[in-house]
Amino acid sequence: MITILKEVDYEQPQLEITPSDAACATKHAWARVPVEPSPAERTQLKDKIRQLLKEKNAVMVSHYYVHPDLQDLAEETGGLVSDSLEMARFGRDHAAQTLVVSGVRFMGETAKILSPEKRVLMPDLEATCSLDLGCPVDEFSAFCDAHPDRTVVVYANTSAAVKARADWLVTSSCALEIVKALKDKGHKILWAPDRHLGGYIQRETGADMLMWNGSCIVHDEFKAFELEALMREHPQAKVLVHPESPEHVVALADAVGSTSAILKAAREMDAREFIVATDNGMMHKLRTLNPGKVFLEAPTAGNSATCKSCAHCPWMAMNSLVDVARVLETGANEVQVDPTLIPRARVPIDRMLAFTSALKGGADAGSLVPMIGAA
Ligand code: 13P
Ligand code: SF4
Image 1 (cartoon, helix red, strand yellow):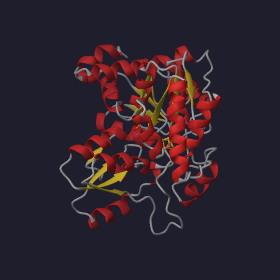
Image 2 (image 1 turned 30 degrees about the vertical axis):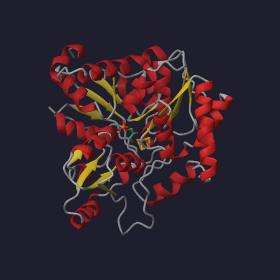
Image 3 (image 1 turned 45 degrees about the vertical axis):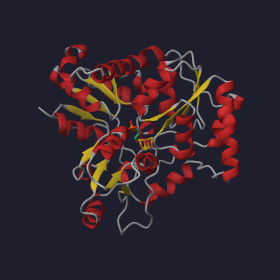
Image 4 (image 1 turned 120 degrees about the horizontal axis):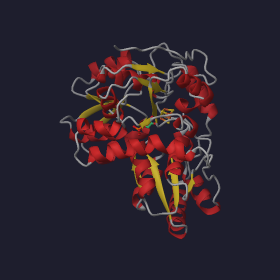
């Protein structure tokens, strides 16, 4: 039997997560979006960062949504730009003793949990995520306590304390396979925090999932009605959607997946035009890797809105070259995770990384079911 219950109803969460112009206006007030340096300053800062990375035995790990300079510099200096799953794996496996994580706080915390002996620096420690903010550990623990018969699966976009309550961690690039394997093994699932990603996984797998009611303020803004209008204007375009988007938007997609799955689809699909429903930081990689193709941003608000939200995460936007140089130089902004939480928070992350590396190594998801354990 399939059950979806909204146990925790966040009609009025601490943070306003409203699909309206208010979200757009407020989100820019929460975040300090850095001033763009001049071209000369950019060159100087990049040179300085290259030098500091060598001096400090450090490597950059950047997410696809951060400023293009931070993506390019990570790659040019032997670091990585990728989705949240591969950021975690790369940070764990790289020999450098200092990781500079450009992204949001959960990404830095995951790196620290996996490598407590390394120094993990972030350009801005206040860069967080609405999913993490909307899932406070006390309420989440009470939710878990009320449903002891369920296997707890949490999205990577959560605090270390929430991870420490989980059985499994997932990102959008592996959630489908992991939940399907759990379902096949007879598990009923307690899922947190993203209701849209959870709903997508449930529709695809038919798993019995009890949902936390969280959402991403960026993806929640994509609108199906306006997307359909844009699709009519561009009838040849393929639609690529991140599964943190609402159900009606996902239903219009030609491909649904994580940031890296979106990149793969754009490269492999035989189309010239694409409409993309994810943070517009993705456009940099999409365009540089596919010079002959055209990428359009999916619409985020209707004509009735007084403000078009911008499809860019306000917290990802807080990462800057100036702060990367500063934290490398001074050692400021070191990510701290309560050491008593680390061993338990590591359990679900290690499971996810082991499962996904077995999949990558060619195992089919079905054969990995024994790794999951019976319910
Ligand atoms: P990915 O795991 O797809 O990179 O997504 C992380 C994220 O925060 C999306 O909003
Ligand atoms: Fe969180 Fe959404 Fe920003 Fe991703 S884009 S970090 S899910 S608020």
